[in-house]
Length: 255
Image (cartoon, rainbow, N blue to C red; front, side, top):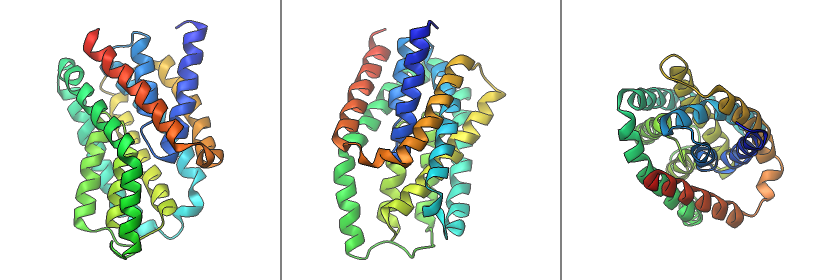
């Protein structure tokens, strides 16, 4: 990479770490940047997953106050995320790279749709909470555990908008504040990404410079998202994610 390309990857990591801590879908920033620099899709994906782990950890630490009293929930849901993340990572390595290149445009479009619909999802979650729906504060139903596990599979395989999925699932199926649910989301994403990244370390090629730059940027972005990030205009964030995500789809389909 040139100096300016390295700066672009670093800044993309900062943006991704910030966005992941707030809602999720930071991969839709970093992944297209790596593609634009000529990194092969599978290598870009695994390098991005490894690089975003420090950002997930940073965001989880930033929300540690909201995690108080949620140990039981974290153990049950975290186990599902770990299992799912490992399965997703194994699928990425087991399936041919051509399959990933063919599937990812559809996954990105799905992720972008979730990002665009996020305000409606949030309103639906708020209405459900106001009606008193959801399970008890410290419980995680079998349905939610299974859904979190499937989200972990998606996260281990690709992961864009994994956080949006987790927020929607837990917001609908749990009776708790959105800030506490967001804190759990950060931990679950950390678990899925972390186990996938560990698997990739021993099974595939990694662009270490890209992973390092994203790691440094996402760690800083995680702290930004946990502090000033809540004040960023949601519409501006969604617009940026959609533009970059569409650029990634175009890059995959036309080049």
